[in-house]
Image: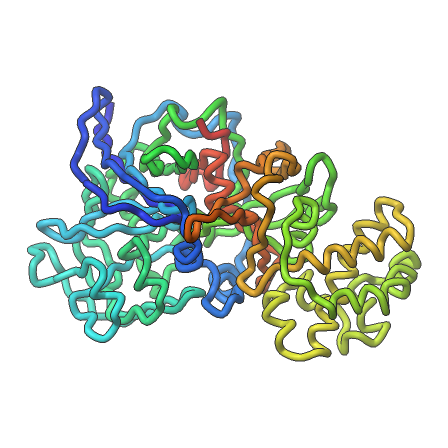
Amino acid sequence: MANRAKFFLPVALLLISVAIAPVSASDGLRRVGLKKRVLNRDSLVASRLAFNEEGTVAHAARKFGLSRGYLEPEPVGPVGPGEDSAGDIIDLKNYMNAQYFGEIGVGSPAQNFTVIFDTGSSNLWVPSAKCYFSVACYFHSKYKSSQSSTYKKNGQTASIRYGTGAISGFYSEDQITIGDLVVNDQAFIEATREPSVTFLVAKFDGILGLGFQEISVGNSTPVWYNMVSQNLIKEPVFSFWFNRKSGDGEGGEVVFGGVDRNHFKGEHTYVPVTSKGYWQFDMGDILVGKQSTGFCANGCAAIADSGTSLIAGPTSVIAEINQQIGAAGVLSEQCKAVAAQYGEMIIEKLIAKEDPAKVCSSIGVCSFDGYRGVKAGIRSVVDRATTGVTDAMCTYCELAVTWMENQISQNKSVEQIINYVDKLCERLPSPMGESAVDCDSVSSMPNVSFTIGGKNFELTPEQYVLEVTQGGTSQCISGFIALDVPQGPLWILGDVFMGAYHTVFDYGNLRVGFAEAA
């Protein structure tokens, strides 16, 4: 059996100081122990890399808004590559069930850093010893090129913008140690500026991207590509297991070159990558309980993203899901006003088969034809609603059209439809995007299912609700967060989903696989 090394990652809560002494095991794996505390609300906010500090989803729009050409799908077999295969295993630390990271080494001798293994980006960056003016750098490990015998100067400048801020610096080359693997001549960014408070309080030092080179800043060759080209792994496959059990210290593992059968049940369901950049695939209908939301009945784009804590989707659908699970967001009187004033007119036009994309302009609420936010997705509804009354009314009209279409398809009466939309208005997310639920009602909430590869992948309330502790009291947060992006709609299946389903990223066959986590 191949040698294995593991990395632990932290969950979205506060971590106790960790002893990183290697623990021997009879199976030949090397594990790193982890201790953790309960999820803290401040840490949850700080760890949410996919959303910016002003409460918008600008990062997601930037991160996932690029238009990509579609690929011819590769043949998909009944089971995944090497279902019994061994690989190099990196233990992940679980930080508040919201952030998972592991340890890597940079240089010779290795300088250790904790990084998020992020399938939603493609670059590797760590703080540089030349970072003088960002406070965040003084709270994290910094790379010292002068102390590495394998360092090679590059010097190309680079910057990456996240929703919570941006990092900038310059490229260098050195060897990267990941478990027992040593990647030679790897280009990475030495970050010299980390202005965001997120990086100041983050439990990780940097990010190791596992996306495709097509989205790599500076077209830098990703670490994963070099693992494959340098013949360091048996198969061009890596896989994730996230441990969502709050009582366990182990955060999970990422396996390079294979999968660990101990962490999933049955076989994986595979779907082809449809857009090479992120690990994007086609997803089918979404059900709450056994009821279709109708939004993705004809298909939606989705990505599996280990760098996003929650499940993100279009505002209209997330509001509907949160309404059905009893999550409470920000009460919007403007949204309710649209339902009351224009509801019957919208319903009449939809029943008359008028183009839904032109309904809001035809009744004078919007000054253009065609969906701008719900179907195409430019900015979050919360962001747009703050830019002016007229803009907000148009936004809410677009949402109402989508919601009413769904209800008309279920043969609901006009009164029932307007009342339904009125309730959904109350469930629009808060300015930070999240919605709260009653912790005592979790057991009675419905399951939510995502159709992938013709199979329903079900999440129970216990899996999609996060419990946040602050000052000795607990609050429960919905795992569904609103997100509208360019080229949308797009669903981002983050750690809430990947925690329930072991995920395989098959680079060789350009496909993604899911199986029930064990």
